[in-house]
Length: 403
Image 1 (tube, rainbow, N blue to C red):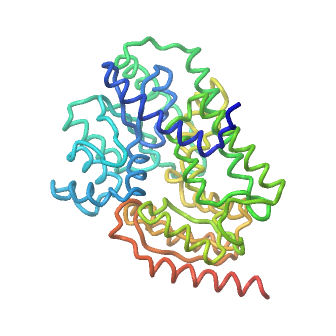
Image 2: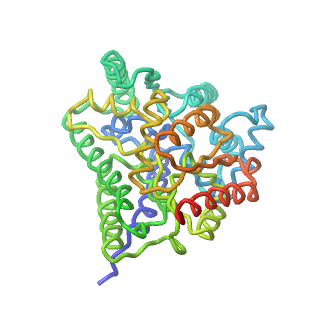
Image 3: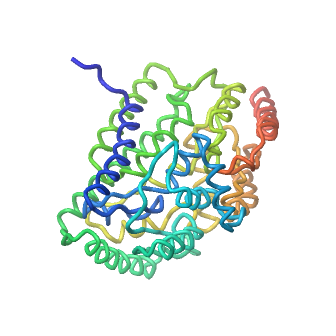
């Protein structure tokens, strides 16, 4: 009997399968789409369309050290260095025609939702114009109020209907309400399993996982949230983490002395360095808002709830809600401090962070520090600054712990 595969292996195989399926679809003449990371994937999944995610792909090639070449190719074409490095990596991929480290077929249509970023609108419009391919756009609008208003929910639902019409035309299939019900059920279940897995550090010492493992597991909730295979993978993940918690074991490499919330997208070109440096100082990331973006929760057949969930992304809410999300992440992770990534690619979020982290510190009385970096452009990160800022945070946490 073959050995049972662990969660990491199953998840990595599932991710590889998404790319394999897309290439196979291309060979068979079926359309392949590119989508922003929190586009309502349910709308494409019901037509069995293959979607790939350029943000996820850019993170992968950045971790494999290819993003700098692709960014420079884009810049040679006139794209500003001030643009998001994910976008420049993607433009560079199209200019080069392929990726050496993570091949991805070109799109036949695009699915864009601006609930996580507004730059994606121009990014995807640009590709649609250059490639002369359809663009399905979902505009969420920014939530100035604390709750998502009824008018915004109705606005989104109308766009869902139009997107379904467009995707039906692209796929050549009729809309099936029963299929939507099925996909919503699977997606909601996967969101709950993902959220639960992220909650397991709370109350468990040491944390059952190295916090950076979340970013490995997260890729599948981005790429395959509406698939039953993801449900099985997350059940394996939960089983593994619960077993670690029960035995007092952890995948953290080193002694867990301090717990922190890390804010923002990782610097993928330096992900290994960051993990080793945190481990060196006994610091584990047990809180993060970023992975929660894909823990969408709604009831089956509740389109209002689905619209509300997609409109409530952590980048699409007012500062009061942003602060609440971070406070909850700190509490849920039993954190002793916060470490903020001032991300050159996400300028809007980085500018907001200065005020946000002051408010969070005032409410929680927890120390914090920040470092400069970039999610995919290695030119905007320095090892020395990262370690120096971390040292300062550790000194304060240590002083407080020893009082």
